[in-house]
View 1 (cartoon, one colour):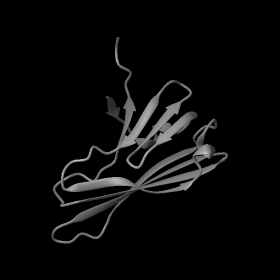
View 2 (cartoon, helix red, strand yellow; view 1 turned 135 degrees about the horizontal axis):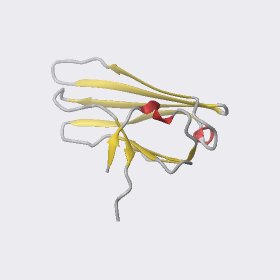
View 3 (spheres, rainbow, N blue to C red; view 1 turned 180 degrees about the vertical axis):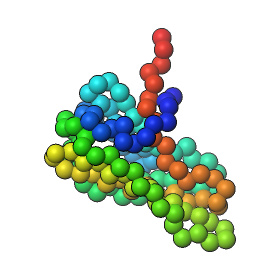
Amino acid sequence: MGKEVEFNVLVGKVIEQIYHTDDEIRFKCSDGSEYLMHHEQDCCESVYIKELNGDFEDMLHSPILSAVELSSAGDDNDYWSSTWTFYKLQTEKGYMDITWFGESNGYYSERVDFVEMIPARS
């Protein structure tokens, strides 16, 4: 499928296409690279895109100037934990903030994966 990479690998890249659903975002770049932001769901957890601020169109066809990932634990109680993960992208045309929210019983991961897609060998 792909290998885990740091989100800031996007700095300097030019994104040609962005595809998103409630639980994943794909970035296709002009150099042929492709990245997937997602979470493999397991039982007793929920991780999803909570909010999008900005315009994906501002991320297209312009070099990425900044790509920052921040994470913060939410309020935990005896039976539940939560994590907020924020991704901030900026080009000369504008910005995009992507907020993920994850919650679980504390045993499962609430982490968002960012992977470089590896093309299948023929």
